[in-house]
Image (cartoon, rainbow, N blue to C red):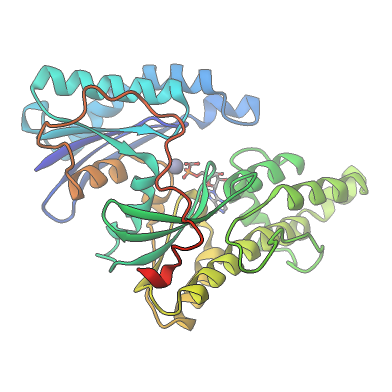
Length: 349
Ligand code: KG4
Ligand code: ZN
């Protein structure tokens, strides 16, 4: 089975071809719109939607070419149906539906978060149930992945996502966008204990995140310094800020693991922030402490990409039989799973 996947929910225009023979991902083309958004210091939804319109056709063409297949070889077309910026999602879904309709193929709408959730499984067939920390520019969640298509959200952010915290922090420091990689690079030569930024972890048993406090605290710190002092202390500021954000992620993940009392078979990490090497090392340590394997999505699958969307459609071919799809309206605020009620503790798995 060959699936063409399309991802246009944010600022990456992406297309990929996945087949059932390993290696599953036959091509994975990502066009980053960074240059188009950089002058604004962040993503502008209207700019993103227009850029998807411009770039999607050539990106699909390249994905097919690199996979060595044509439209005639495809068995299904999948696209991100949400969550995401509505203009971009409409572009991707409409294009995917048009291809499917013209070729008589099933169209499959994939939840963007499911794509991220399963991307750790591209590394190895991670055993279920696993605990997933999904950290990107738009999301910051702890999910129980009970099986393909079965997700339970344990915690989420009550304000900024982790990647957003990095992006906003970098903006305050005048570093540019996206902030995560820039902060990580500078942090390498700084001291993580140079500044004491709040962790925003709230109650230990609560698994929600909050990053607005650490961001505000960075702003106050910068306001107390001259521009020259900020420049001079950039590595220390970055290292301390990164430490505060990562500390919250690690502590909540640890709490989720402890609360489950050994139920999880592994720990997964995905989303753009999963590129952070310090985070990978810290979470690997947590998994070792629980004697379970740790799987992090590969850097090429951490950011937004269509490989994860096509893979999600292929691995769970709901609707690939043509029974679903064309009536789909895009869902800009789709969630992967409702927040688990208190009585659905992981011990009930
Ligand atoms: O998954 P992604 O490409 O897009 C969303 O779905 O949001 O994630 C992008 C986010 C950005 O906020 C970026 O700053 C962050 O991931 N990021 C990082 C690193 N690389 C990317 N954050 C921390 N450290 C990194 N190395
Ligand atoms: Zn994403």
